[in-house]
Length: 53
Image (cartoon, rainbow, N blue to C red; front, side, top):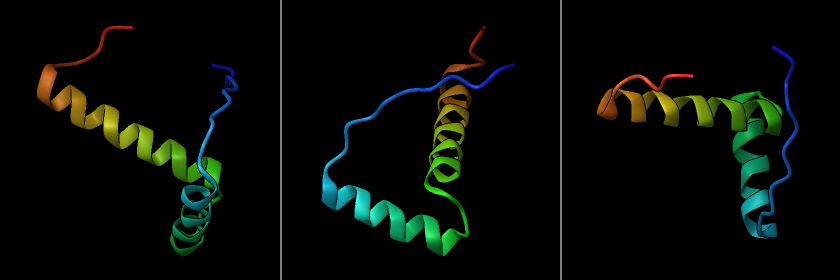
């Protein structure tokens, strides 16, 4: 599957904090955001059942 691009508006302070957390975790911001999205979807599916594509 080809990756899709999205654009996100984010406050400067939140972006700075995201940089710090991403660096600490040894990830790029993009990779870190993907990890967070996957964890959130996993949590959702645990609570509501598997999402059908």
